Amino acid sequence: MKIHRKFLYASLILTLAILACNLPGSTSNGDGSNNPDTSIPTTDVPTEASVPTAENTPAPTATETAIPITDTPQVPPEIKLTKNSNCRVGPSTFFNIVDQIAAGTSLPVIGRNEDNSWWQVVNATGHECWIFNENALPNSDLSAIQIGESPTLPGVPANFFVTDQLCQPGPKKFSVTLSWSSGGGETSFNLYRDGNKIGNIKASKSNYKDTNAPLNKNLTYEIESVNENGTSQRAVQIVAACK
Image (cartoon, rainbow, N blue to C red; front, top):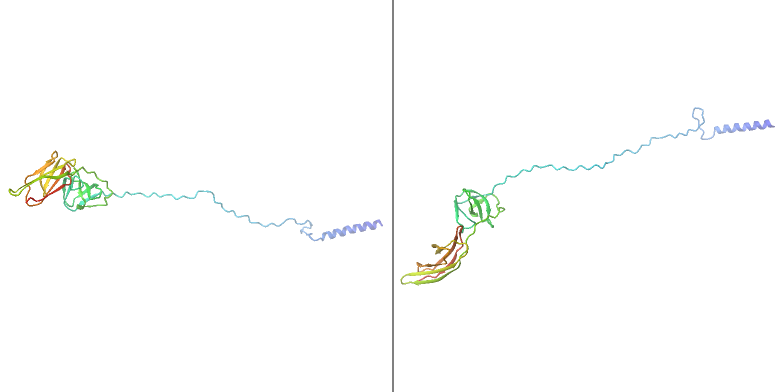
């Protein structure tokens, strides 16, 4: 009876062993071993492509190309005379004449007056004098040239009056007495009758008697102050005709 139980027990174990060999999931490695393959086939996983990173390098800066500066030759300011011209001490016809210069002459310009009507130049002898604008052509725009200095003219005689006149038609004599006062800065006075100079009078005097005034016509008397630079404008008096 015990033998019979041992036999059954052995048969059961053998049966279980056989069944265990045929259980699902049991595989053969081809080498007779029954160890399951626990190795997991691996596939090459592409690693993240290395992306070049921008370094914090300063951006290239534009370099300035030095442009050579060439100086444009400056044309010296000049005028060319279009007619024979008087060159005067200052910028008006009241100033004395320094030089007379022929048409076609070019002169360097060193100054101008405020309204550009006169040019201050240097003549052939190196003296400064002034040329009237309408007698010359500038070689460029000369309006930026500095205002030139000019000497002082005397003042216009003041209080110019006829103080006495004596008309004598019979003996055909007519005399006119004139008086005035200083305008300032004069060294003498020039007196004119009808445009003709009848006297140069000392600065210390302030009256004049014209003993040879003509008859039968209105007379125009003019007086101007004089100094070393020129003359003033003229003061005027009109005298009725002696008939």
